[in-house]
Image (cartoon, rainbow over all chains, first blue to last red; front, side):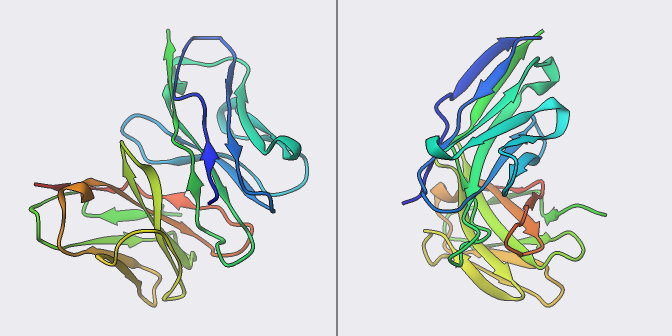
Length: 116
Length: 113
């Protein structure tokens, strides 16, 4: 079965530190890739997405992610985190073909705590 | 554009009861998907409706059902509630095309006592 792995379950950083959250998926075909963020008390919001083209995608709030097809990875990065980035981050995948267009498969999430 | 809205926001039910949750998608969106979020299982796909038809289904028992109306609004029903059904139920809407992005509502927090 298709799965998404986020190896960092809990990350604690100081403000201005750099962030990289890992995401790997198991499906070998064409995929659409997403990072969503859930701030405390708020609903899931889209950070960025990759469908095709340039494997380095930029999202909101200074986040970016790189799709590396050979490694089945879509890691999220931010050069300098802020206290307001404290949230839970979810990597997710859909398969654009085969009748499962909108079935998002989520990773288990990474809880990021940024200390001021 | 208004975002995805879900009602009610909070629900408390007892075992054996049934519950209906409602979701209004973003205007113009024809696809509505439902997800269950729990601390133990994370975010899991329940089903997707597109143009009033169920297009995809996750691995949940038949007690979980849904429907979509001609205005794209969707309802989700859970019958014979169990304690383990306590969760945040999220609705997401999208256009329903191949290169699609889902936008989530605030969720309905269901507590089963």
